[in-house]
Every structure is written in structure tokens, then in C-alpha cells.
Image (cartoon, rainbow, N blue to C red; front, side, top):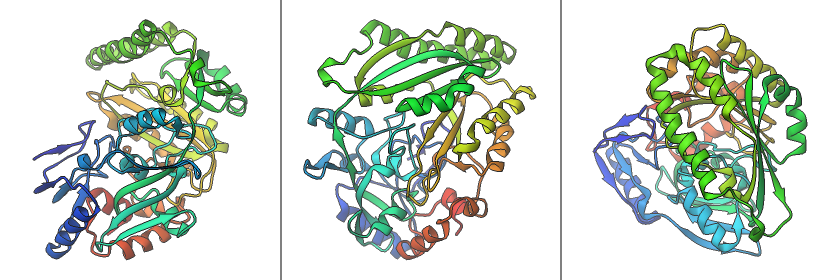
Length: 433
């Protein structure tokens, strides 16, 4: 069987495929791998652009480990099996009248994959999914089932919440939740100079801000999401026609066709971006949180994202634009800009510092390597930390200086997976042997 990730950048041919139904079945596979000095890797939906989940020998598929298993309304926590997709968790929480505090803009990932790679949103009191975790359970490389919670072994929880799949196979995750709430989204085109001049003001005045810059133009699109003190029954979502036209037809179908054409004739890209940016119009709508945070992504792309310190973020963005403008690289996808508060998760990209995220995308058929190589030095020079699930070139010796608790994580890995049962090529690069 051949495994491939969503973007098509990574492939693998595992020698064995197993669909465990519970932690005991995972323990058996780990013990088998230890005896044979082989490896085990649980895969999710493949939405990481790196080989972080690429299986080398035994591939575990979590299709039998999905759904919510516990709801504690007194503690306001929900526990779900780690193979559950974020989209399915969101829909289940909505039926329960509950919601996560914050989330990214894609909901196709499994909970284990999204948490382990440091998936994050923008703004809010908790930027990343891992920062919303109250507990977890996993099978370690020694075949032990361990549990960590904020009130019981908080050090293990802090180190394991973004675990890269290097410490164990996650079986359950316990999230802090809150009552279901409405978000009002305000989307509007904005000139580059205006967007950057008012970015700090916008992030101070709104709960969540997402900025998109269209390369080769002076145009941006800004999305501000704010909580409403209203009952969810008072939502005013986009009409079915407008939603289909904007988010399905224009943002996916037409965008995909235009990208495919532009890849063949790169000279048209600057003009295409100018037109695309100018046809966007302002819109305001409200809906339950997960429907505002997330959106469908049907056009396959490749992505690199780095988090730099918040205080230098705008200047880093300006420098990235300078090197792009000075090059002959032609880019069809907008550059996405987000920011989050600091958290206390050891390998979170926001660990210990307010963070400013810059995400660079290309269509799957475009050459992402020249583009990413152009801006990555700018991001690294600013003390950037790469998203663990997105394309980057950093290795263990590069990552250790930007993560104060990197050595603590490596020591925990030595304890929980001394035989490197969960190793693969990506983990050997970013963590060492």
C-alpha cells in the first residue's frame, strides 16, 4: 500500500497496515515493533505538508478511534478519541451546545495530527489547539499507556501537547471548551499601506484578525472576527447563493482554474492578482464559531509558515515583500498573516512569546522551492520558528536555539521512546537521532 499526504509532496510504502480500535491494540503494535527493531507511525488525514507522519514500516490508521467519549460540563471539558476529525468534533460540539475557544481555518485534520503539529488560529486568548488541551492519553515507545493532565503531571502535558508524534501515539485528547458562541465576520479589501498602518489597532480592537496580501499588488483583504453577545439562534449567516458563489465557486473552482492557467503563463500572474484583489467586496455575516473560523480548501497547494516574534512581525512582512518584489518569482496565492498570544507549550511556535505568523502558499503544480527559498532566510534571521506540519529546511541544530525547552523535549523523548519506535526521516532531521 502506498501512503501519500494531501499535497502530494510526501509518499511512503509501509510494509504493514493496521487499524487499531483501542489503546490495547496500539500497545500490541508498539511491542511488536520493539521486538523486531522496526517502527510504527499513526497517520491522520495527511494534511501536513512535511513527512512528519510518513510511515516507514507499520502504518496505523485511526479510522476505528473516532468520536467523543466524555463530556464534563462542570469542568467544561470534552474528551475525544484522537482519530476524530476536527470537522466532526466541531459538529458534535455544536449539537452539545459547546465550542472550542479558537481554531485554524482548515478542519480536515485528525485531532492528534492537528495538536501534534501545533495547529493554530489567530488572536483570541488561546491561539493554538494545544494550548486548549486539559489532558491527553498516549501509548509510549515502551508500550506504556500514560496520561497527563493540567492538575496531574503538568510538566508532561506541557512537553507532550505538541509532541510531533515522537513521544507516543495519542489515543484520547481532552479539550477545554465553552458554551457555543457566535462570531461576526467583517471582510473588506484594504490598501497595503492602510492595512499595515492599522494592523496593531485592528488586532487590539478585534478578537481575531486575518490579513491576506496579494503578491505583485498593493492590495490586501482583511477579515475581523468578533464575538457577539447574542443567542446562536440570532445568527445571520451568508445566504446559500452568496456562500456558494464566494466560498465554493470563486474561492475554489474558479481560483483553481486560474491557477492552473497561470502556471503555464507566469507573466499573467501580476495582472491576475490585481484583478482578483479588486473584484473582492466587503461582506459581513455571523454564525456559530466553527463555521466562521474554518472554510473549505479544494484547491491543492503547498505551504510554508513561520512564526516570528510579534514585535518584529510587520517589518519582517515588509522585508518579505521587498525580496519578492525584487525577484522574478510569480506567486498566485495570497500571503496569509496572523498573530497569537504566547502560550506555555514547549514546542508550540508561540511558546513563551507573542507571535506573528506569515504563511506562503503555491499551487501544487507550481514550483514552491524557489519561492520558499527566497523568503525563508528572512524568517530564520528574525528568529522564526517553522510550523511543524509545513515545508521548511530547519534541522535540530537550527531549532534548538529558538526553543528554550528543546533539550527538555529531547530528554523526554529519550525516556518515552528510547528505541525510536516512532522515528522517521523527518523526525531524525528536526530532533536528531
